[in-house]
Length: 239
Ligand code: IPE
Ligand code: IPE
Ligand code: MG
Image 1: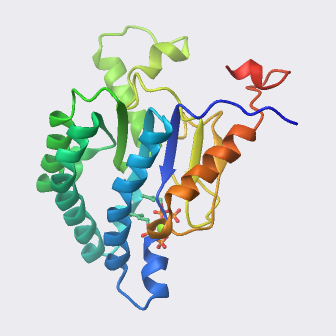
Image 2 (image 1 turned 180 degrees about the vertical axis):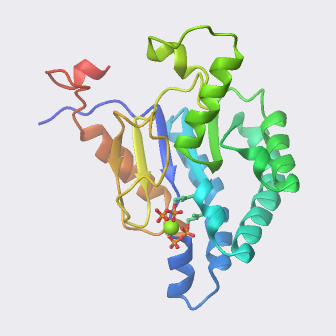
Image 3 (image 1 turned 90 degrees about the horizontal axis):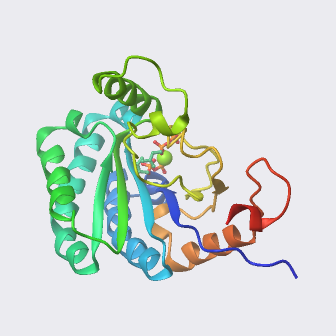
C-alpha cells in the first residue's frame, strides 16, 4: 500500500460558487455571498483542528471590482459585518489574520475594518489566516518591485529569497495545497508565484455547501499525492 504523507502546512482556498448556489435557489447572488461568509468560520475552525497552520482565503479578487456596483458593495458590507462578528472568536482560538492584496484601495470603511481585524489579532500564535482581499498576483508583483527599489537596493535580486521578502506573503511558506470549490479548474489570479509547486484540487461542491468533510477529503487526497519538486524519488524528497 502507498504510504500517506503529512498534512499540508499551508492550504489555499478559492471560495467559489456563491452566485451559482443562490441562483439555483432562485435567490439574489448576495444571498449566496452571505451564506458563503457564514461558512468561513466553521471551515477555519475545522482547518485549525486538523493542524493546518496557514490558511489563505481568497475573499475578493482585483477583477471582482468589475462586477455590478451593488454586488461589490454588498460583498464589502459583508466583509465589514463578519470582520466585527469574527474578532472575539479569533482571539479565543489564537488565530492571527494577515491581509494580502491592495486593501487600502477598497472603500475606506472596509479597509479600516480589515486592518482592525489584522491589528487586533497579531498576537495569535496557533494559526495564521491570510485573507486575500482586493488581491491579484500580478498586482502583488508590482507592489513587491516598488518595495524592493524603495529598500535602497542598487542592483536587481539574483536569488528568489532576496525578492520574496517584498511580496505580500513575506514570511509565509508557499501553499502545499490549493483547492477551489465549484469545479472551476483555474486559479483566477490567486498566488501565481507561490503556487509553482502547489498540489491542486477542484471539488465540484459550491462554497456555501463546502463542509468539514469536504476539507477532510481534500487533505486526504493531498496526502496520497507524490510531490517531486522536479527531482526523482518519492514523498520522502518533500519532507
Ligand atoms: C465567489 O463566488 C465569491 C467571490 C468571487 C467574491 P462567486 O460570486 O464567484 O460565485 P459564482 O462563481 O458566480 O457562482
Ligand atoms: C475567484 O473567483 C475569486 C474569488 C473566489 C474571490 P471568480 O469567480 O472571481 O473567478 P472567475 O471569474 O470565475 O475566474
Ligand atoms: Mg465565481
